[in-house]
Length: 335
Ligand SMILES: C[S@@+](CC[C@H](N)C(=O)[O-])C[C@H]1O[C@@H](n2cnc3c(N)ncnc32)[C@H](O)[C@@H]1O
Image (cartoon, rainbow, N blue to C red; front, side, top):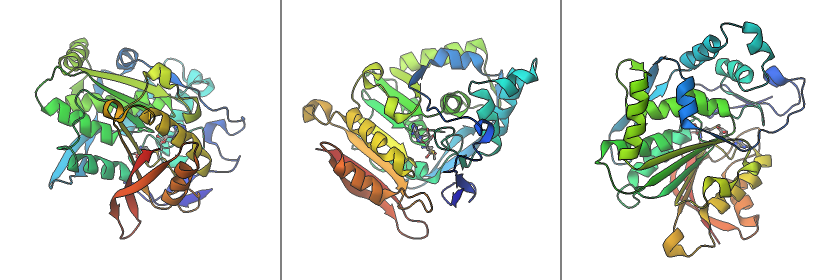
């Protein structure tokens, strides 16, 4: 068990590299989850009638702060338990996402490779990335573009983008925002609820049929197309997701050496570096700790991986914090 400090809320993040202690699946071999699309309409229909949330504050590069609503984890826990209230044994025996999700909702910092990868919590570099996006918002307009957030978890950078879109006038442009997380349960329990809350967050959010209709109507009005993909990076299918993107974002995803090649490969493919630059111009941004103690990953290892990849790329630091635990936002240009 390795422990290092890279969390917004506490300093008890664990990455388990042993075959022991794999939470509810400890006695089974780990078979990676494969690429799967989750449909917004299905997830909306599975949500409880009420959702509770608390604000998270993003310091903005342009000065000031932005407060975004984020679903409470205790509320997600309540949802899972209520869904299985009629048959508690079903939860215990479930082979689908509910059982591990319940375990990790209680210990969201305990990362277990290819079982649970930390998406239930908000990690601090995601705030750096949102803040950086704020700083470049006058130069890079996402309207009409294709955006992919890889390893989104609570999806703070995408929430920042959506907040901007929902705060501006509707546009004729069609904007595609795709979110990927290893765990389908993370997309169901936090990512999608957070998106609805970013659209509308009264004191108490009632997920009525009328609210769902209004949400779909708003997405159409703003030309927004949201898609959600779960599963391991090495199974991500760019053809299914519709090809290359103009903005590729990821935060706190370069902590594990073994995953770096598949992460770099997906990023490279998503940026379609071989396309004509005037059509396929892109921004590819990674927010991360410089070093993930005890796990081996970090900026240096990621840069080496990018450089060594077939038709690799180069990396520039576009933002950094050098005091305390060092953090960076880096921009990747693919060859
Ligand atoms: C520590 S969490 C960071 C979540 C979020 N980006 C943030 O900063 O708050 C790491 C994320 O990377 C994703 N991830 C890690 N390894 C992965 C893998 N091998 N395949 C797919 N996703 C992976 C998980 O989805 C997880 O949400």
